[in-house]
Length: 279
Length: 332
Image 1 (cartoon, rainbow over the protein chains, first blue to last red):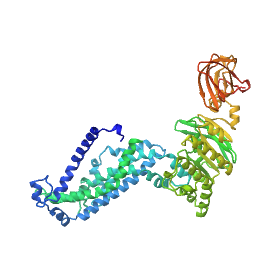
Image 2 (image 1 turned 60 degrees about the horizontal axis):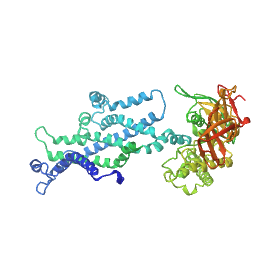
Image 3 (image 1 turned 180 degrees about the vertical axis):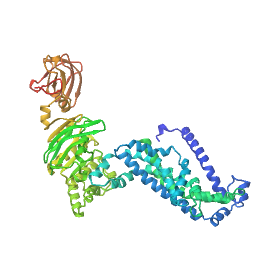
């Protein structure tokens, strides 16, 4: 920023606001991670204190790794999240390309129809979805979850990507057509690379609700083989006794994979968010 | 090389008619420029020729063969775009070669044609670079190279110079003119800039509101415009239009080009006051408020000293005056 437009007091004020927000946002995460390394007594005696040599205990992690089937739960969560994400991104971008690129009867109507899902929560349809899955024999499979999450993620993806696809130069696509590229090649080779920043944004918005979801795994795939991490952590939450060490350890572990995925997308994400602002 | 024929091309987007019955024949090796104000349909017409848009009705014939239903890649055309439209992820070499590879040409043939084209456009030092590492002028040369490599029957240019700065525009214009002379290829060029049209074209097609106003060689359009629109569009500064009734003439409008007005301090037909003078060195533009003819622009070659506010006489060269009827048609 130029000297003329920055003043110390304003910089301090801006940072104060941002730091306050960061502390508020990170505090619960910090408490979870801190307490996951403490003994049961340590957690209850001083929940806000960091682990000391006296209270440090890995019993939570030991329980998680020994009991239940956490490696499998992680694998399930990852499969469901990554496959859904891939489906949402590829088909979302394809639909966006069609809506932005081709003139056909009912184009606007189709766009509205596809965006309708943003306004209507998919959970309203839970009963019907369950019936459908039972009828098609998909209960207790990861496929059921992947299908539901793809449907859940597509509307927002299409909505955002359509706007960005419209901004891609027509000349570039036409140059491809004159060079004899098929519409698929134009889409995958010319358009998709230019859509990377908005796709990272969509990926993050799509990925986090899927990873954190408890509702659909509980209803559609509660079997031992198909449990996701969030559902798996529930076995430590009892009606009368809750194994807090194990719950906190499971939740701390569950943060890691999304964090890694987020870091992969974040550089593109920042570009995606800011590119709209300055253009 | 190829010829192009358009028969009664119509194009509408929904209710809006963009092209209204365009007929045109372009002969082999000819350089034809479509010129007109923005929104006149010139780019749409080019897209119809390229096959990027379908005409609502009418025929496009390239080399005598009807290509209405042929996809762009099968029409034997190459196109250069205003925004260059280079593939951002490919090197200059691959940008130029992609079309041929896609058509299944053997690798040595592709390499040979790329070498020839890059030598012609002095692009050799940049062959391994990506478009992002090139300047605007270089990018447009690559785009032209990409068209040359395809050895098309028909070159299409869609305002290729509009994104370049003034100096580069002149250079690239020269390059396109030389390219045409060397390749003897048929070229169709779209622009809104009449200087480009006048300097490059064998024949100019003036379009307005989706119709052809006039087709002719540059000097034909300048010397004998068919109507008021063409007269006003070709030539800079614009032709002066004077209400015929005001001058006691029977026609609706009288047109005199600024360079066909003789200016004198002592005597002349129309007495007036200098409002503003533009000194460009090679010529001087005077804006004169005359009593009989209203506000006129006069172009004087060389330097001319005229203070704003001074009295001056303007006299039209009688044989250069154009007369138009109420519909804007030329009547003399």
